[in-house]
Image (cartoon, rainbow, N blue to C red; front, side, top):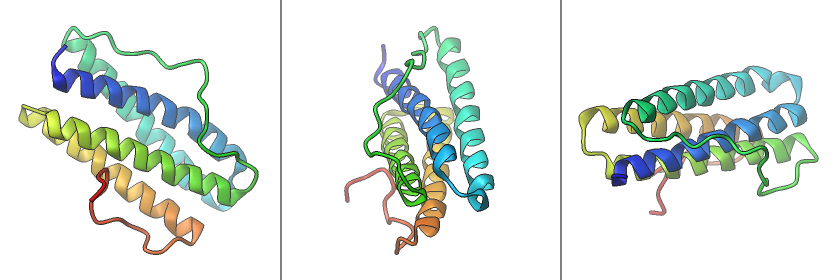
Length: 144
């Protein structure tokens, strides 16, 4: 498997986990952020589906979703849910930045850049919900 296909497969694994996590974020979030939860879930599901088709079109077995995922934090409050959402978006940004670094075609670079940008924007929205400042980071998906 090529480096870019490996990075895309790893990003798909992350997308599966994010979708799972948003189900729990939804259960612990107040009503006034339902639109944000729904939009984020839709975005990640659409990306997962497009990525699955992309990998299958390349003859790469798309990794399936796991039956469950271990969360990095315990959810008890709406603040915990917002923090988990930010963490998931940051983790997804790291995965998409890795794809961007491995991409060797314009199509792969464009797909990865759109995904990375979307994760950064959604993380900023969740940071605003959580009252975190600054809401955005300079280099999403990186450690700079």
